[in-house]
Length: 413
Image (cartoon, rainbow, N blue to C red):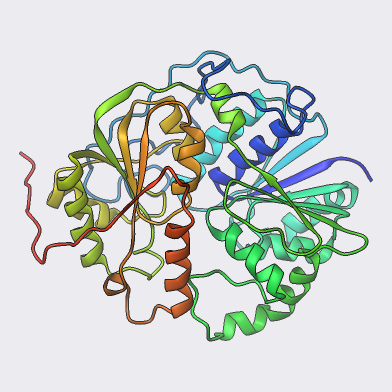
């Protein structure tokens, strides 16, 4: 068995595989990483993918599906990447999602990976009937030959099925948002793997997939024949038998920036409304309150935020809605970026301080009070959100916002 095989389904997962590969190269030795601001050079995405959706909100296959919002294009000027420093035996498989925003970001990230010398395979894993069987058939030889498998989402049904059929000798889990924290906690407790925002009861789909989940739980745990590494920027305690490797965003800092800073603040959006955790009215009021308090002018949307919600935020607050064409860590590092970045509980309260180390940018997190949550949200989800806020980096400010019952309304001319 030879080679290293990575499976990614989101732009952030792909970024973190590049970070993991960079940390293992002889140039860094996996230990002594560049200090922020040292040896930094600019780089950016090259070329627009066929399904480019930059500058559109809520599109399908690149076609506008609602009101156009003021979305400034992210800067794309770049110098050539150094490239060629990634392990030559690394193959990165993109299990392509269906939504156009994720596909556009993934294609740009895939080009950055190729610039780094990584072999990238784009797999249309969800393009209709028979795609699952075809994907399994085409990837089986790669899985059998892989000495190490790197995954970005241990909760993914696709990844769980692949690992059930083919168990690697060495497994690495890279960050996929705050899900890494929950994965490590569930692994330590010996629980079944389930996303933190899902309800505790099992529906018909969960019952049907229970055997796959149970088998995946065993394949995602260390044994005498399998090592498990967690490569993370989050505050994670190593479950028994696993290794936790610090993720410092060394590749991002070495390739991008330092950014130009603007005078105002930027807000970072979240998909907590879309996942059914936070009430949409409370969320819109909170965004308006934060924008007024901090003098924010831009709102960086999460790729899963709906067109309707973003349109409402733009109309009610006057904020510019920005759909980033790369993960926010790269956008922020490349700049321009506000001197203060305000976020709701999410991964960025842990990752942005690392990516922006040495730049003077201040990151703040706004807690989610219980009254914002929807009625069906479990106590487990509430505790998880509080934990994300409480474990944020020491240099991150903690904010509390009291949303007014009414929100000022702005009309575009």
